[in-house]
Image 1: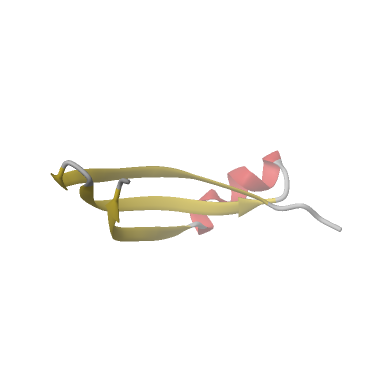
Image 2 (image 1 turned 135 degrees about the vertical axis):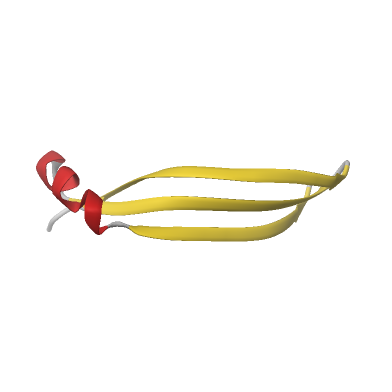
Length: 58
């Protein structure tokens, strides 16, 4: 069985509209690899993932 890793860079913003309610946006670049060598090779074949959401702290 082969193991696969995932790595990537992530950035985002979180804005509190009320003391316990927020909206957020995030962008992440993800790529898969089996070893250190394949991580370098697969970096260009990654994909962007975007997240938009709303949350409540309680």
